[in-house]
Amino acid sequence: MSTAALAPRTLADLLPAPTVASQRITRDAALIGGFAALTAVLAQVKFSLGFTPVPITGQTLATLLAGTVLGWKRGAASQFVYWVAGIFMPFAWYANDETGSSISAGWNYAIGTTAGYMVGFVLAAALVGALAERGQDRDLMTSVPAMLAGTAVIYTCGVGWLAIKLDIPVATGETNAIGLGLVPFLIGDAIKLIIAGAAAPAVWQLLKRS
Image (cartoon, rainbow, N blue to C red; front, side):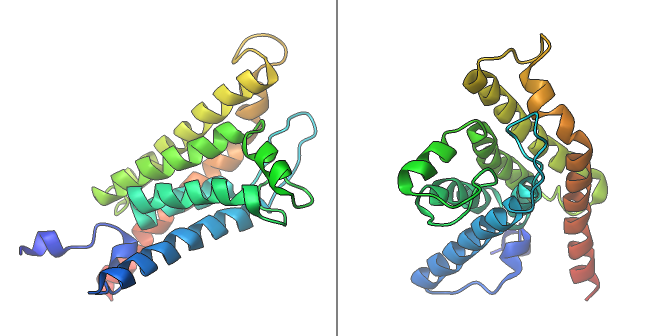
């Protein structure tokens, strides 16, 4: 087998690979569950704006990191697990869940006004992960654009669903989905995507030097 075939494609691939299939599955499940939990933790770092049902949170940072660290399959799986697990959690899991929930309440949150963003998390982690597997996360000049693409996917899904759920225009009128679900978050998410975009190349360079 060639050296290129053995080369790690993502940061998670640098972990020792178990030779037993059941152990590999366990390792991958732990990685997926760990990033789902990280997303839930950063979902609790939130600031409500009052005029919009969408809070400022750290979720997008977790999503971008999940994709770049885990690759497209495991990254997308981690965000799907985050989305589905919140239906069943007896405590606050989603960003807009203030008190914890029953299964029925969890379901209402899962398909609520911010559900589009959670769909976007899955797709964005897959996209960023696919780009990471092609080496786009190893240089700042390609890593940041990859994170920007992932962020764009999140907001495309989030704003689109918000318009449907609230029955408002996407971009026109005094109240629209872009004004409620995108514009207030541009600065914060620019910072988050730069952090994620800089973190992966920094880790790769550190590992290369060591």
